[in-house]
Image (cartoon, one colour):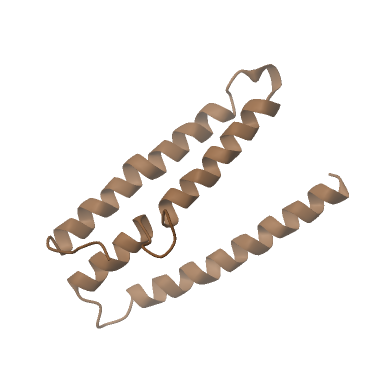
Length: 116
């Protein structure tokens, strides 16, 4: 691994560490005794579609995985899709499957919620 790759990997690790700390805070907030159905629904909606930042957590994660898939397409041996296809499928599962289920759960908890 080159020095540049090592630096890149170090940045990725640091960024993921920051993300893990932020997600731990979300988990701590979810564990609060006073979280009710409308608030839980609002938190779920934030995970799927953050109103302050375009996208939300799951769409951003899907975008990162899609970016990895596109890069894999360029560098995988024989361009056979052995690496890129599973990555594209994972991105679709995050968006279509996990994201939709968050929406369903939020709607079930707070049918009148406005998503904000």
